[in-house]
Image 1 (cartoon, rainbow, N blue to C red):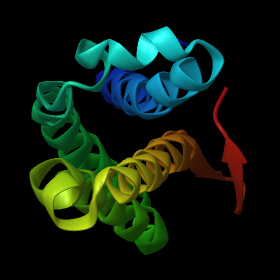
Image 2: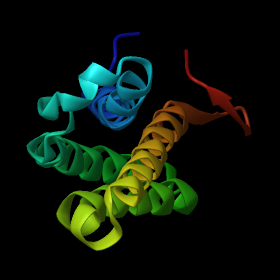
Image 3: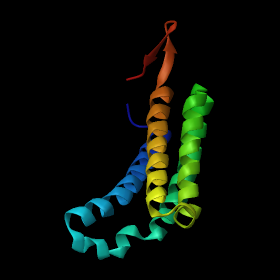
Image 4: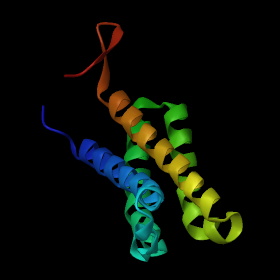
Length: 138
């Protein structure tokens, strides 16, 4: 069965959130392994966070709310919204208010919750009531 538009949107938001996690972790790992990479400022450019938020937040709000209308799972909705809130706070005030390390940790936590929310959202949306029992649609 081909992916629906909401499946594609969920997968896109997962990919972008995963990219955020990689963006947060990669410079740290590179600077530990190869110290001369520590000077590559474009890897830690704050504009990167803003561009990700411009794409992730609307996409996530659309797919998570659309999925919630279908599956009514409040836990998925709340955790995904908390993840969105964390990445917004991290990008907007994280570095200046909490410092670089906390900003990175908040971003990773938020992105992880967003990824989890989208995976759960897809699973719940692709599940339907069949013969009195819930079963996954193939």
